[in-house]
Image 1 (cartoon, rainbow, N blue to C red):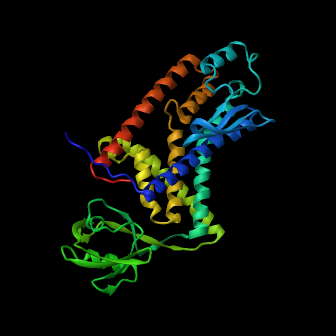
Image 2 (cartoon, rainbow, N blue to C red):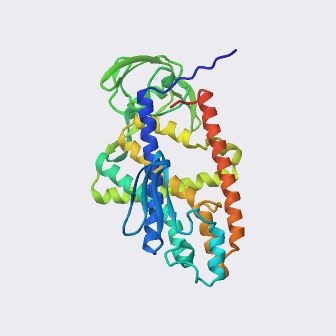
Image 3 (cartoon, rainbow, N blue to C red):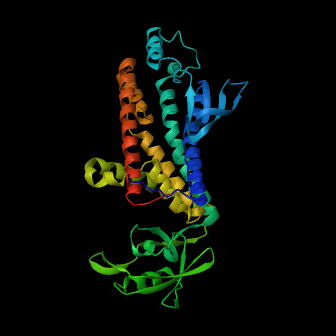
Length: 380
């Protein structure tokens, strides 16, 4: 009999996982809050607005709107259940009856009774909320911690698994202060020494939490623009410079646009170069692993990660995939162009099929994440 030993995360690791889950839940909840705001603004009744899933821990019912506000046990997102889309009755049946009656049988506060423009606005409000949240997070980070400068520091940033730095026990967030007994004052000097030391033993002194540590590493040969340089497997963190409110807003806006473009570019590459891009996909497990690493780099970097995840969440939900906001929006656009809606039963069937495919993809991506962990390519 063979026993498999798995290293369970320590208290710090569990804390990092909880921080990530709370962050992800907040991003999803704010996405749903975008739907909520536009639904209420257009007179749609929201039966339930929940933070988390599973059993309800706390519940409060608004005496004015009748909305049940819930805090549920599992901090993995949230939902906004509107009248006409809450699953309590068949949505396609409601829409079919509404169309057959000429709009006479639905209350004014039912989602199905609203105009195409109102329904479209409600559907896309969630992804737009994610973009606004990302913008706000980047502004907060810029004002509180500054923005990355073009100059590198001696602090360790993202690391490559299996390279000398990681194997020597160096962690993201450590600060390299000396090489071979000589102080290192800036990132350019650090990079220059490592690049020029292919195959040579280097004695590094670094600090973690103010405590000095010493290790020996030997840079590997690596090709950089046709030139061979030595690497130990990490990117130095950028230095940060403080900015005023105006520059914080402009820089954050530019970065959000860049993030949106990069996300669409990655999705496009997934379509055109699937075999080489699919391996880069990460699910919740992969994102948790990334979050664990970035938390060691400080709150400025973590706010940037949260902004990036919010953008990814917004872009993903805008994709014209059945069961996602983008898929629902496509059917509403089709209704606008045709002058009449798509058969509700057919639309419901497409959404159910799309949801099944979406769940399958999520399972496969999660399996890929876990396989990478068990293969030694990263742990929480």
